[in-house]
View 1 (cartoon, rainbow, N blue to C red):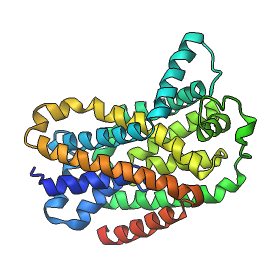
View 2: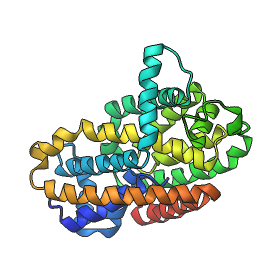
View 3: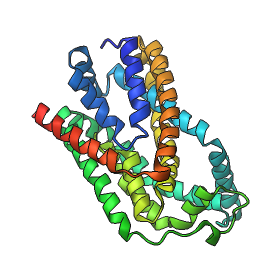
View 4: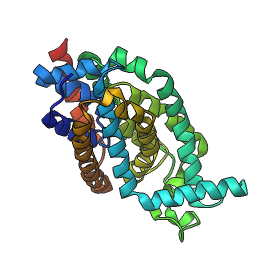
Length: 300
């Protein structure tokens, strides 16, 4: 399989943006090459082949996206890691970051286990343009339903009602005070749907957060924090593919694509933070519905 530097940069940029936007990076990695056709369309076929060098290339993009999130939210992660260590040592959960650490652990376990067991199977079966188009349309309905159902969500707790303001920011305090361990487990189960091309991990976790009473800004932050270990673990797990024989001939392209994904993820995250301070998921829902429906017609 030939992968040009232009293709590497374009796909890297696409990965960095769509991994964080609630529109599914996996779905777009199937649909965009299929729409472009020609040599791009070969990349769709490559995704369903576990021995393809293209999957090794994708590893680099995922790691770069996770690194961008770590750079942006490093203060949160320092607090979360310290909170997890202190919680294990004391066998208690008392501070905001201790609670946040365990919420992330509980949300990560279901998606992590399911990913290890079923990722290759689901990618092989559903990494096809028509399937991705159908799931992208479903993703739009999920986002639309989330906005409608959030009116019935539990009352949002004011930051002032929650202790530990001195050691954590107001958004983190609000998340830790609003989301229960049971909620985190449910959101973790919902994340497993993102293994299907077209279903967005960030979108479905944001909807889960909204349904528990989080604001859009808080749901976005929680989504980013939940995504980081999942994306990073998936990438690190497959790093041997990139340094092994499957990486031969594409390591330069992988570096170029990773750089594009890193920059795109930084820009996308900052944009989304500003967007969700005052806006909703509705434009993303409409985009998924329209793009999905048009793609269904085209690829049927």
